[in-house]
Image (cartoon, rainbow, N blue to C red; front, side, top):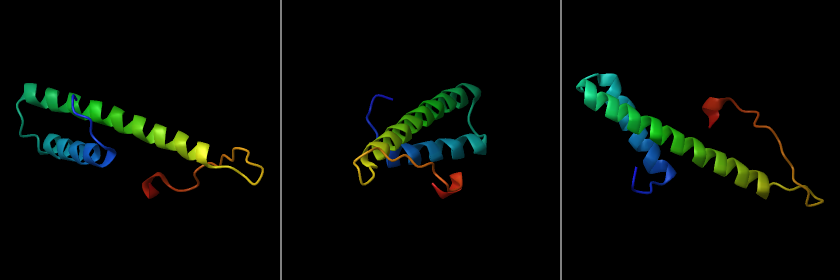
Length: 79
């Protein structure tokens, strides 16, 4: 992945890859290449989410300017 993708573009690209793989119309070699691209995008997206989470934690402070960490209480589908 030589080009730098923002989160939304990377997510859309991953969704397209998943759809391609679900359709099962690709030859084996192309399927493997597409799967590898999907794995790389998935890792990139996970890193983006980790970075965003750390940034939110840095920005979350209480009235004493102390870090205030609160666990996410929503369902993972709420993200």
